[in-house]
Image (cartoon, rainbow, N blue to C red; front, top):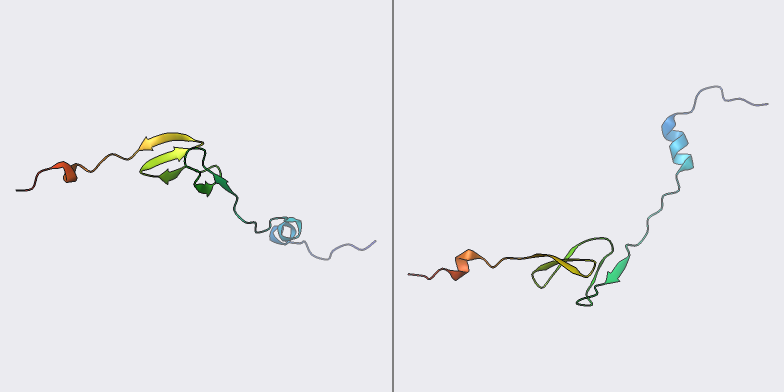
Length: 70
């Protein structure tokens, strides 16, 4: 029965065993706005951070815009 003369490296074994392949990213439609976004990620929509159809953070208005100019 044949046996290897030298030990194979861990990298060589890992290359042989790998099953990773490049896949296209999956997009979903937002429940509130219907906007498409990456799945399982929060996204900005109309100044609000939305995740799973819920508003997580609302962007505050800039304080510099509210100050009167002299």
